[in-house]
Length: 369
Image (tube, rainbow, N blue to C red; front, side, top):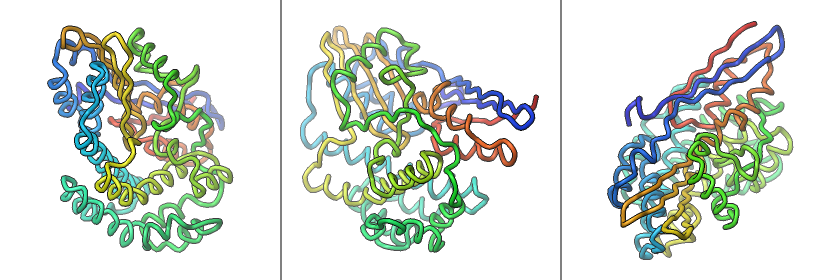
């Protein structure tokens, strides 16, 4: 996907003396779904979706396939559904590992672990081998212990782990300190895919079809919302304790990623054995030859809405996770508004922005008044 198709996000902070006087989030991400998809057949649209998006390409392809199937009131065969679920989970795991072993260390001035990431990528086409490789990576590189043991830590167990500095990831969590989280947001959390109710989803789909600009700044039940691993794992005891004590900020989002990643080997193996539950892909036939698909990605909930006419796409909308998290009045804007202004404002803004993981290039500019 070329830069002209991707666009970028520019974040401007205005400091007046010791106060943060303004936060502005400007996105140049173009709304291309209708222009690119209209007039194409469902298979062609799915292939195109997988090609033009440089990140989460498999999730984009699956979302397009599923939305068009829902528009035709079709259900995929069990083996097709199983394959798609596994592909989406593997891609999600790779993205989480990339954030935790590349982007976060680089931001903290540490060397990224590229060899581990490349080993994981080499087996991405084989879910069984990928599950084994991911479990080994978690145990030897990221956690320093078996994922099941780490997931079972209660009370002060997580703090004991991070303060031990047993792994690079533990050291990065220790580097966040013991005070309030950086860039706390109180925005509504977009429900996890499995928890979405049909009435709300149908209302969202109708709004996307009727108001294309909605896709650039979506709202959930009247308010901006945050999506991502932190929304999916908010009820996990370790994450709930972090949020209760420190707030839902950059550290909470990284912890949610690590929790989800630690659970993925087990989920992948369950999916290989039985197909698993449909937890990362859902479809909603909307009537009138329209359908909607939801796919959970590393960045959050991805939505595709399609309306067909004579077997071709007449209307197409995409609501991407970045548009939820980087909404002008959404979680990032709220998180940045609460940052300290005396020291390290720009670095903190970058940390918070990366914790919400934009799928395009972004910049942070600090203006003084």
